[in-house]
Image (cartoon, rainbow, N blue to C red; front, side, top):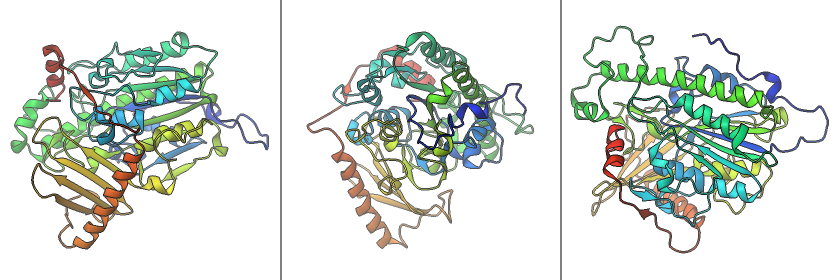
Amino acid sequence: MKHAFVFLALGALALASCSKASPPAPQNVLLIVVDTLRADHTGLGSYERETTPNLDALAKQPGAVNFTNARAASPWTKPSVASILTGLAPEDHGVTAHPEKLHADFTTLAEAFRAAGYSTGGVQSNMLISSVFGYDQGFDVWNEDHLATHDTSTGKGINAAALDFLQNGRDKDKPFFLYVHHYEPHFSYLRSGEAWYPDYPGPLTGAESMDALIGATSQLRDEEARFLAARYDAEILYQDQLLAELLAELEKLDQADDTLVVITADHGEEFLEHGQLSHQFTLYEELVHVPLLIVDPRGAEAPLLGTSAGQVSLLDLGHTLLDLTGHEAAAFPGEMLGDEMANVASTRVLGTMPPFALRDMLTIDRWKLIRTQPAEKLAVFELYDLIADPEEQQNLAVEKARLVGDLTKRLDTELLRLHAKSPAGARTAESIELSDEQVQKMKDLGYF
């Protein structure tokens, strides 16, 4: 598919000077989180379909680094975004259920940049991270005028609101930190994937609710999974165009050569790979393996370059952004992406209500360990070789019991290390009572 517009010009992200002196760190930060974008359905993740031609071109720019083994802290939006904004693991920030609110005592990435003299803005589309849940903490401007519903597309409005912040909503005497949360790949899939699956025989039409689909999961065939995945891919292609348009506007404003651009996702989506649809409850790669692309305007002299295949976690993203923009990052949780300590990713899913099990995940080298701890029952372990078995179909936990024991110790060590980054003293998320309207909106989006 060809596009009529031209993506970022090479010169916009090239070196500003041929001087031998190291170029200064970029002042501005544009952090884009795309809801529900799994890595292996993008060109960044070597997908066979051309779903992200613009992101693929961006990854080839000077100063770009594509982290091909990045993982989210959780398989659903609320805890995952809280981890991006705080650098804390889900069990440490505590925002792990629908009614919970981020504790005001935690320092967010927006607060860290504001303390460094930035004008901070947030433009977002997901009601789970709305101001009622405390996600506006540290933002001078927080725009949630374009919250998605099950039958609307918010992408154009999100771009317009982001552009409005850049043009009118910020203090132009200060650098900016702008968080943009796009929603297009999230269910419902409003665009047809017929170009990629023209011969689907039915019975699905694309108008079904997620509740209806999940209720019929046992009757769905491979054909239905392919049909839904094709529509999902069509949403990703549309999202890719929206991102290109937003970055083109950044260039028109003459901000591209001084802005660190980051594109990632909060989690992925599942299409019966392990017998389920949607997201939220499992820790398989289709849900936690996300794209992570950082483009530094310093070009070939940027500290991070190329493609990085090491295991990294989005828990370390905030720390890295502060470091790359020349600010003191030691006080913010996390490590520099690419450092040895960051090559272990872990997450915990606490569920939305009892009796959902606790789940932890550790990936290191080729191995992935998932520990499921049902209430008052012994833990159940899964072990996968991600090189030999990237689709996680062969559980090796029994035959490699000693390795499971070693990795479990490492997992617990990592969780303790992450916990040590949490502020001293008890911090618990505040639970709020949701209105009937809020609950219904969540049901419409497949959250309950």
